[in-house]
Length: 411
Image 1 (tube, rainbow, N blue to C red):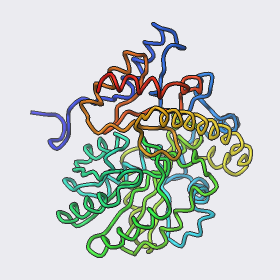
Image 2 (tube, rainbow, N blue to C red):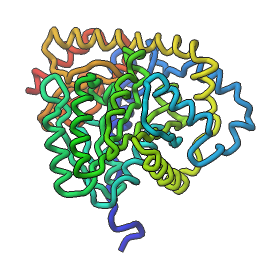
Image 3 (cartoon, rainbow, N blue to C red):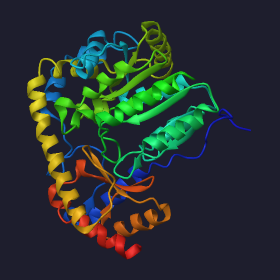
């Protein structure tokens, strides 16, 4: 007998990230923070070990009247000014010819959840990368979906052949294809697809769409920390080539873009060739939003609009200093990793670098051995995630060599 629905996983949630963060915090208390390498935290930190809260963002937020912060949003899909500005922010210079609509969500997570829960029926299968943010699989499970993974990499590039085979396998068993691609600044590898790779994916999805409707869920959570920020959105122009049987949902995160993780604001940007299809998806998303969370924080939406219009130049200038810092950290770690032959997945940009480790048992032993050396990281499928976003340069220096020495000991 149970008080919850039958088709649900009742195993207690195991958030490995927060568990290891707690262990790292305890180690700092015991050994001193200078002796501990804490590469666990997936938020942006400065060189003094302080969480980055951009001045341009929070001065703007503080200026919003308390009454505006207290009131409900204008609608369940979000404030019109916010929805318009999200589209402009992402696609304003992309020459997109696709019909579109925008639904405000609680962070990028809300956009991912909406797409999974509303585009597939219970028991159907969603296609995920095999190296990915763990919450994708959890959200799929809670929506009573199955998952099938494609190999993220073939050597030093995107695993197109494996992606193709996985999608074809799913299409053989159901009449819809929903795929997740986390790009640019993939979490946790830091890979970004090339224009050629995106063209191959789009051509293939159009072929799939001759048999079944296709939904591409493009998670762009870390896009605004791309090292080539000016061109980071250009690949979205390629979506113009999608057939009318392909829809795209872009999952956008204000949490990452504005270093406002706790304000829980994001958006699902719906793109398609036919306005009627876009409107239908928006209607379904709106009803699901009403049922799940009702409203997105009013002031969070207004603040995004203000920061990216009235304070845009100052915001971009301030954020650029942290993008440069991320690049310094990643360059240092990767250079030293290459010198000592520490295996890493191909990294281009972003918050994380991942040590390549396909043997899961070895990965577990390695992770435990690293902690014994006061190096705290996060286990992901087929790898060990190093959060350079929160790791000061002083701790990046020499880290690859130390990690390689530990790896040699456990192999």
